[in-house]
Image 1 (spheres, rainbow, N blue to C red):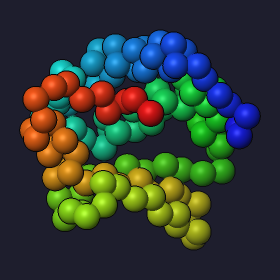
Image 2 (cartoon, one colour):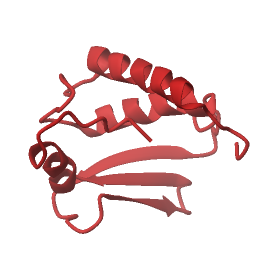
Image 3 (spheres, helix red, strand yellow):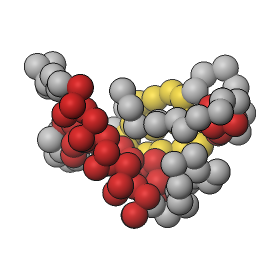
Length: 115
C-alpha cells in the first residue's frame, strides 16, 4: 500500500467518481455542500475511497470491523480513530461542528473528497 501513488489527473478522476456516486447513493447527502450526514453516509464514503484509492484493501480485511460516528462535542479535532482490541473494531468519529463550519465560513464549494 505504501507504493500507491497517483498523478493529479488520476486523483481528479477518482474523486470525481466518488463525488458522483455519493450524491447518487447517499442516505442523507444530497448536494456538494451538504447540510446533513449520517454514519451510513460516512461508511459509504469510506467504502468508495477504499475502492478507488486502495483497491478495496480495507474491505478485504475481514478480521476488522469499521464503525462510524458523528460527534457534536468534538470542537478541537475534526475527527479521530480509535481501535477496540477486545472487538477488533476501528471506530472513526467526525466532528459535526467542524465539518459544517467548513461549508459556511467560505464563499466557494468545498470538496471534502480531495486529498
